[in-house]
Image (cartoon, helix red, strand yellow):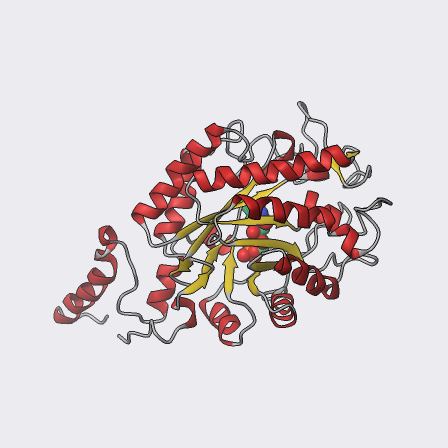
Length: 378
Ligand SMILES: Cc1cc2nc3c(=O)[nH]c(=O)nc-3n(C[C@H](O)[C@H](O)[C@H](O)COP(=O)(O)O)c2cc1C
């Protein structure tokens, strides 16, 4: 076996501010729709914990609402009351004590995509009962059948900006290592950024600097609550993918603005701005060119995401300098041990298996030897 830990870019450490990640593999944030009143529970502990044990360098917990009405579904997690802090603390403690992984959380507000059903009951569909009033940049529904949101006035904007700051304080208290802001897929922040959903004619609408005013206020509010050494990223839709929407040229500009406000990396996702546009399912590596452009033209670290699945693909992205980190979502649903399996595929001697599981790599080679001694082919 070769010990190629030193040569595989996947398993080279990476530093964001004071945070040292053991490798470049990220568990992309994935809503689980399984919380009660926003509080994470055993499901989240096992879901996130097993992926930490599985060897990823960074786990990003699902989009968590900064207020009850900012949740996508009634089952979404939150970070708006102290009970949430306790629930999350149990999970961050486990990850830190039992793995080398670091753990962050995605903070968001669902805006006009709030008060909807979990993925498996009909994505972006309003609830059958118990809908709550929703808010957004402008009073236009996300899609046919969705509620018309209330357009936010200045006091509502100020309130949500403060909620993000308060949530960030709770994130620190809960023991997370970093925050990613959900600024993609048509949720509240993305909704302000895009001319498709932002029809305002005040200081928060119109040209790009105006449409960025609210997102940047959110960034400032969060930054003010974080220790200097704690990283902050933003996931954006690097293109709305529709005529009249934001393009990847805009993504470079918005990334520069985020960087100037203390954001450390950009995750380049895409789409989702309106019901009729949906999030296009990317071809394998389909969004990687956006991560590459933003990294090189806005001079900021990037996280690639979107239909990236194989060890070869992740290595390629990192070797070519397209991104600094690579997030896999469904790949980690299929295999919570994606990173440990990658070490085996790469033939690394010390694959980082937990002590409790060290029988796997050892036993595999012993087993092969025994079978060979017994005259069987390996
Ligand atoms: C079950 C599920 C839940 C998701 N929830 C979130 C989320 O909370 N925040 C987010 O930014 N993206 C979310 N996504 C999108 C993923 O993070 C990712 O960008 C997308 O699935 C493409 O990556 P993949 O091809 O590796 O799955 C979700 C995806 C899935 C499959």
